[in-house]
Structure formats: C-alpha cells, structure tokens
Image (cartoon, rainbow, N blue to C red; front, side, top):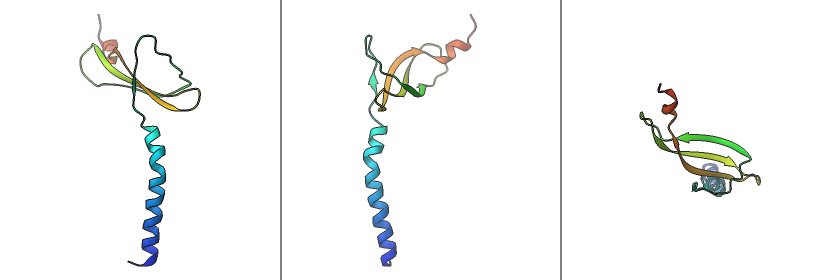
Length: 88
C-alpha cells in the first residue's frame, strides 16, 4: 500500500463515521399510536402496512416530518388495503 491509498482509506472512514449520527436520526424508533396521541404531522414521507392476503387488521406505519422538520415514525392498526378490493 502506498501513502495515497492509506490517506484515501482514512478519509473514507472519517466521512463514514461523521454520517452515522445523521443515519441514526433518520431511522428513529417508531412510536405506537394510542387514542389521544398528539399528532404533529407537517409532511408525510411514506405510508406502509404489513403485507398479507387476508382482509382484516394489520400493522401500518407512517413516516413523517413534524413542524420542526424532525423525521418521526408512528405505528398503528388499520384495515388491510386488501379489504377494499373484496366485493360485498
């Protein structure tokens, strides 16, 4: 190895370590919704739900930015999207 290769490896390692706090903030733990939970949703980033072939209650998650620009996630129960596709 030459000095240039070692310097490049050190630089990449230092930049990666600096990105860890930002990555940790983006993957914050999800809060579970309970009746009466105050919701401060400024912008929805994504809506997901557990996959399944049955109609019924499933776990869902909303990832959003609050009014302070912080990314948050909230887990809640909802009727599966498959329920909308079944005729009655």
